[in-house]
Image (tube, rainbow, N blue to C red; front, side):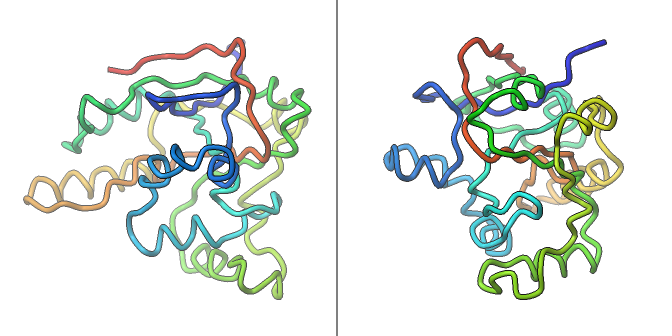
Length: 215
């Protein structure tokens, strides 16, 4: 049986011995934080979610967790090309860390993880984002917790899986984005729209990790 893994983009100027979240990066290396935070300076809605919304069952903000994907990045790149979506400049790193999920569970620096299927943005899902805003201070409790199950040993053994193709939600999003580009428009590209994530609270030690390149 193939190892169950998650993927995390490796920036060209990666430094240090662990993958850390943006909050921690800001404290340790503010000069690097600027370049990494730039990718979140997109739509005001997305920025607000990342910087002000609590991840259910994890207890931190979205950019206070290390975000990883369960789909091979080559599949994502191929799908972008198929739908006519620009794949970026050659100056952008095309290297990714491959992280066994069991290793994360066994690492004492990893405090907790949750799995997120990235469901379609139904009115209920959107309401959950709004009510999980940190300014509400948990006044209404945590919403949509079932969309963010804790990734523990039982979840890994019985429910976790790596997907090998886009979900229907992601396929539709890519199709719509490609159609907009075909019309000469410049829509915001949300690469991992609709694709399952694993949010990691803590640091990810990179010693001994494999990396892969996509083309």
